Amino acid sequence: MVLFRYLFTCLLSLILLRVLAQEPSQPVRLELPFDPEENDVEVLALPDSSLLVYHKTSNLWDTQATFYFTKYNHVLKEVWADSASLPPDSEYLRYFTEKPFTYLVFGKDDLQEYNVVRINLETGQTEFKEFEIETVDALYEFQVLQGNYFLITRSKDDGKLLLMHLNPTTGKVKLLPGIYGDKSYFSDLLADPAHDRIDAVLTESNGRVSRLQVKSFDRNGELLNNYFILQKDDKSLLNAEITRGDSLDKLLVGTYGTRDLRYNRGFFTAPLASRVVDAEFYNVLQLQNFLKYMKPRREARIRRREADRLKAGKEPRYHYRLLLHDLISTPNGYVLAAEAYYPQYRSGAATHRLLGRMGTIRNPEEGYKRTHAVALGFDKNGILLWDNTFPLKDVMSYELVHTLEVGRTRDGRVIMAYPDEDKIIYRIMDEEKFDDEETELEIQPYKESGKIVSTEYPGIIKWYDGTFVAFGFNRVRFSNLDTRNIFYLNKIHF
Image (cartoon, helix red, strand yellow):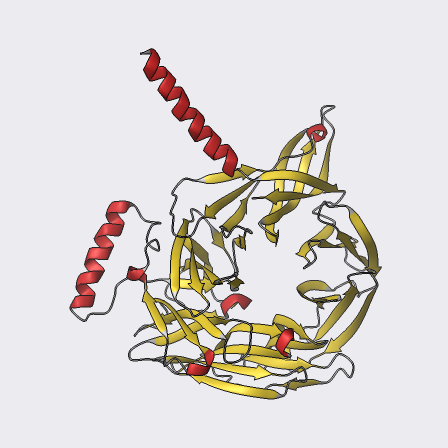
């Protein structure tokens, strides 16, 4: 009996040590005197391991407002602060960093008017310009190449998506050549300053088949190259992310479907210059962990059923819609993450127009529920090395946007995380080693700050080298029963 207790104690100690070793640390917390009723706040990660915090303070009628921008270093110490006098109805939309500047785009009540704030990251000096784009009523993506703006917008006349170039010096806007069909959309837009080009990946569809088209432009919006990526056999290419690099080295990494273009059947990689002649295709059943969000018996049953259907030449029955994340570059290749989702309708059947990672045009869905998230590792030639899965429970969004953040540590582990009130739900992936243990981290206040009573608008973003930052509004109760609202930033290191 004594020996049994000793062995049991040792085993329990090893389990506890393993859990404690993996639990992320929260070395720094910053609390700011913001109130969710009075302040709009955005937290933006900068490439020099710092953060930019934007907040807007306005009166009840939104007739007066002040816009503040503060930079914090890697230990959340203030570096500089500045403000801008924007119109009170300005609302933050997008941002993009091209050293030495960060650009923030603001929309207005007039849907054709936009303000772009340019901030010098070294000095904090801000300046802004107002632009009017008469033909559009929404902006979905914004990127900068050598000081020139590239926008994905929506036509106010027919609702089609448009790719535009805006010269900030002259204010001139031009529509870039592309296929702007009713069933076409952009799945990626990538600025590549090292090669002085920007690549736009378009999905073109006639409702029966789809293909990809990649257009490359220089800083002035002049077309450099145009690649039509044709389908192979019975496979339709649905969407893709593109890598940086020379044209001969660029890869497309994305998803494909078969007869029903609403659903993904697997993933593909292809050299851009090959037009998919040398593409690699990986269906869902080939992936080791894609179905691990299911119970083991259900997974085994699904695999047997689908294998029999494939042998009989029948269409697969599994139905997956995938929202891709940006590619993560690694020393040996790339990591692609995606969220599997399905729409929940209010009534009857409905359709929606997917804009890839840029969002969605609203239709009468209640929202989009997630089943799981996946990560796939590829080498530089596009060969699949591993895959892993993060089961998601009760995760839902009312817009088709990313619900979790994906980062990578220096030692190669992939981190997936999302906020849940005063907790962070996360998964640490060591390549294909699947772990079904649920892991969560409770957001910690200052020891002297008392107790966190409630949390509103929680968020988390990847920061640098396996470090994330969690943020949101807390209502804090102190030992003297005094309470106050604060905006918190917790540095989280995995």
